[in-house]
Length: 533
Image: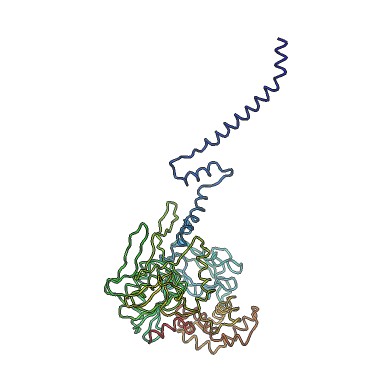
């Protein structure tokens, strides 16, 4: 017994050590097994679901699968093409509002002057007009919160004024010659968003209709504008699609239909899962007797290009300006369960001659959207670029005219960006927004006299006598822009016309602005010349 005890004593430490090592190994094995068993990869399940669930269960820190999905979906769609997009639930209403043609608010047009929101106009029969708010009023408080003179972004103030239809907001305003703030309780209502910026007669027989988008109300607005212009003697029409980024395809098809005879192709769409669909004109269009010119530029896109392409490819009118943006991908919006939505590209637009409107794109979105800057750098804004297109991108209309593919609509008559009258002084005051700021200030300080003027011509005649340009130069000098007489002489016409147009806009809205600014609008003047010939 003594011998045996002695042997055990000798080997006991070794046995204990070995047991500890084995225990550690066993512990590691079972510990690892237990961790892995918390989440089991399901072989036949969707790989993405497996990855997301694995991250949510096993990642070292707490993460939300919903947050990961919110960040991942935009990246997935972004990698497909430049125009497929994810719209979060909280942004969907704001995104849809311009196309639906209305939003809920208090019904004012405003500008910011010295960190204060100044009412320019109230919407006719809108909530603000009904309670007595007038042009020139300054909004100082919204629901008791100071919003004037505190450097709040205009978007922040607008968000306080907007809200669901039927809800109430209190505003306190400062009015000239009234000592105390005036309080108004305003009940929000639907405020229309118009797609027709302006419709007026440029010459006794030539009307102009400017569209800023193609929305749910465009068809109704278009018919009203055409009726108005015909009553004033219109025989020819200019449709201005510059800066029009598109909207509803059906609205563009409707307008094209008004200029075409029956059974003419307007546009067709085609995609991998979508069969070719032709959109044809119908008999009895409202404008088949009108000569038409369409103005486009590098920011005319999508539905604008459908309308321009239909008119051009059917030899129906003249396209004037610069090559359009080149967005020819068709998006379909699908709502998701949480109130968000996906706009997925499901087809491409093609003009009647078979041109794809979409310009080439790669996976690099920066390069895609930098294309407009590259056009400037390569001189395409100053000279027509049709000569760079290969024969494979040339198409022929039924009338024998050559039109060009490769993305966007190439105009029949190219009008370069106008650099005549541009000086360093002009560029500096424009870039600092001084023309706009002075116009608002001048309009505000001379409101009593200016509100008596009822037509664009009256504004021009009145302002010509007031030495407005000299007053502007003095204003710019106080803002740090030194007077340069030679530059001012070079840019005198541009400066005067812009100042007059912006001042008139404060009282007559677009009906005052565009008839004045047309004097320096070379693209519009070319269209007038073309239709007159």
